[in-house]
Amino acid sequence: MTPEPRRPRRVAVHFVLLPDSLILDWAGPAEALRIANQVLLAQGQEAVFELHFVGPSPSTRSSVGACISQIEPLPELRPDANPHATTPTHCDWVVLVGQPGRRLDLDHAEGRAVLHWLRGLRLAPERLELLCVCAGAVIAAHAGLLARHRATTHHQHLDELREAEPLCEVVQNRVFVLDPPLSSSAGVTTGIDLMLHRIAGECGPAVTALVAQTLVVALRRGPHDPELSPFLNHRNHLHPALHRVQDAVSQSPQLDWTVPRMADVAHTSARHLGRLFAEHAGIAPLAYLRQLRLAVAQAALQSGHNVTQAAAMAGFSSDTQLRRTWHDLGMAGLPSAQASAG
Image (cartoon, rainbow, N blue to C red; front, side, top):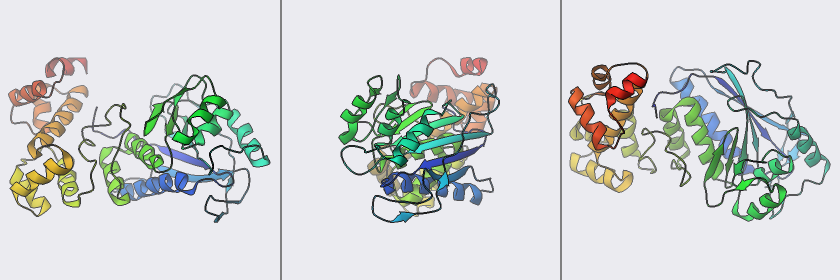
């Protein structure tokens, strides 16, 4: 997977708040988006995410009793006006969250209003997408949005989800499940995991790593989800010195990195850095560097560069070293074939 971030676009994120909505289901993901915007602005880029808190009432109580006010009305959402655009400049995400209790109660005016609004949505990948946190998937099921989709929810609501939508393939024991234009997470804190994944898709892995560090959470994936990017691998830890090294290497993998030079970034010895990588990242420092360089080379090949150019851009000393790394890390075919395909 290419380590380069996608072309920036604006993403309007609409958190739908019903009475007693679990506050961590929406506040945690919203904080992740806010921090992502901060990171982008600090890097001289534009903020990507517009946060909206919407609902059938202008104010409501949260799961912990605090009142949430200035809630926007449920908006009229339509997919991008140009359905053939390959890089839409705007996208809407609708985020549904759970409520306390073992079963959801939607048999009230607010619940019926939200279900009516949801039934009018026309989801479309890359344009109008639905993100369900915890029992938010049950709300989506009652609105008829999960038929012939794969989804997960909190373990206490799995049977309720199956009852609400028999045509949904309910997946259990997963952090989150992706089935565009639908994404769903298992509950509460896993909403942050799902949002980090989506931030990576919009802003790239380097921004996502900084967001995760600011939140002091480990980057996680569902056990069967494909890897996001080599730039996010081996970062499921909270060690600040090791994150500094990984940040520096991932930002400039083409530099002449050695273990002592990495150790200087961590303000430790080369031997101790090796122990930190082994203990917290599960990989040796130079093996980590090789993975990043291979990802850069692969992206260069896919964008039309030849093998010699790709090797130089990634920091390999020669075409031969790139080919050797390509083979050692189990890549199919030859680099030259990927260049031709690109």
